Length: 140
Image (cartoon, rainbow, N blue to C red; front, side, top):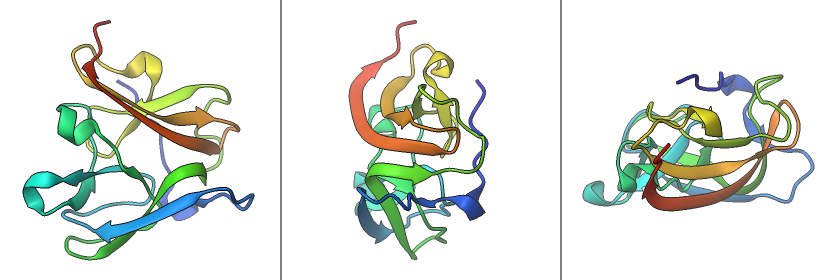
């Protein structure tokens, strides 16, 4: 599976606005650009999402700041986010990867992994986040 290369230093909410931000406490090291989930077994702390289990695939958003364990982290819940120059394919949908904190194209969602759509690339650097956690595994 090929994950998108994210340039953490370039990750930020789009300057066009129209986004919603959230904030929480990290339960692990988080890098800007990683999809994150709230770990119910750890007091709702935020951790890098992965498609291996239903709970860890249920992304809450995409981190827009770096955070160490037990530190505050901001994340984009909905709207456009810049993930780095030229890292996306315009018009493609992107999903939570089976690699913790990874983002992949739909074609790269592994069989028997949980599918959570993160959003659609509107340019080669911007993803419009519209989270949709299916709660089911990919049967392809």
